[in-house]
Length: 40
Image 1 (cartoon, rainbow, N blue to C red):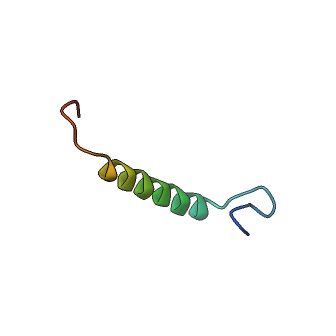
Image 2: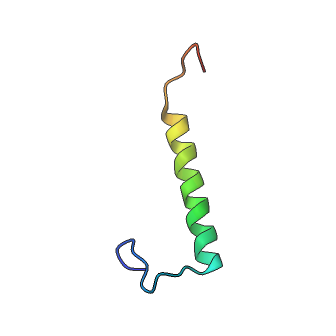
């Protein structure tokens, strides 16, 4: 993968797993950064 783009249009299962975990961590960081409100 170069510059965030796939070379041949396919991703190995291991790479997909790593990217999914990274994405989940980023979502968790965003959720933690949200202010605490009375609604949530």
